[in-house]
Amino acid sequence: MSAPLAGIRVLDCSLLAPGATAMHLADLGAEVIKIEPPGGDYVRELTWPIVAGSSLMHHHVSRGKKSLVLDLRREDGAAVLRELVAASHVLIEAMRPGALARRGFGYEQLRAINPALVYCCVSGYGMSGPYRDLPAHGIAFDSWAGLVGPGRDEEGFCYIPEHPSVGIHAGPVFGAMAICAALLRAQRDGTGACLDIGQADGAAYMDWLRSETWKAYRRPESEVTGNRSDNYERRAPGTAGMHDGVRYQFYETADGHILFMASEQEFWRNFCEGVGRPELFARWPGSRYGDHARGNRELRTILREIFLSRSSAEWLAFGAAHNTAIAPVNTPRTLIDDPHFQARFPWLGAARHGADMLPLPVHFLGEELPDPAPAPRAGEHSEEVLRDILGYREDRLAALRSSGALG
Image (tube, rainbow, N blue to C red; front, side, top):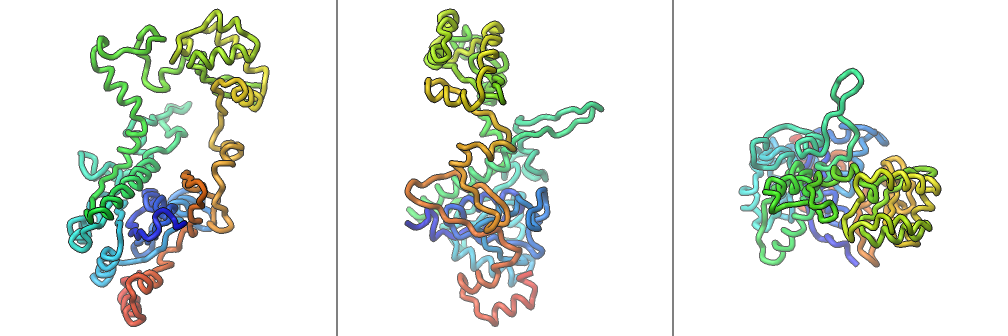
């Protein structure tokens, strides 16, 4: 079978991590041409680790792409981009809003060239709102969205604590999803689109449960309550409300930790019977759903001793055998050794890609997604792209080289 996005051509005018938007499309088989300024995208040098001379971020977000260096300040360079727009389906601007428009490549100008073009602007805070023009890096989107706050060291200095980066990853995922939807419409009726993707928006949306809960709690308690199992008490949103949970909690094992999740009465009954302690269920049966036995320190002490009696692997096997929810607990360092992770993520190997990287976490059953090409050097494919796509002859290429339009 052909790749899902085979035949789709994407022009990727991105800097830094938002280049992942086009990477997702390349992983699904689109032809992606990374349009770089003279000197190239400094993502290659931005952050650690440096693998085989370039940052891991570059290896990851630029994989599967061809690189074309164009100096858009020159008219002959700008003319090349306009020709490529006419021959492409998607253009991604992943900089501050309006960066391309200031060069004469805003959506309205490019729509006149290609009415079916899908134009996607991926920026920090989006194309509207009071923060639209603020310079920022990825952590800003998570701090804005309330996902991470300052730590404080022993000398009283604030510091950025370790946390999963959300906005810089979620934004490109939403961007790629929206591009695919817009492409379907463009192929159906020839209508293009201008998409506005804010990475900060992505961070906030990924945490919708907490923000929507706080919004709901602004309504009177006669309209919005907690669960019946909590006697309708309003608990703190999301995982903040899990602090005093007992049947839904982390527990130490003989060699690590597990997450116990018997919030359903059925799971709790199965656990008690499986460990030979039916009296625990008889004494504390709980409600049918959502009952975490909050604050029951006596039961928590008993469960602590029970979980210490077996290894984490034994508890996982127990959960499967007795139909009760018990999950592994990993760190980013140990996750790569987890057998389920290894079964789901066949590495894109360093021998071909320069660095070991995770593939797109999408499975087409019975099919193999394309193995993306390694991340390119700046300008590595400039003349190849112009020859193969635009049909330039050597005299035209020589003129562009001589003028500096190709960097």
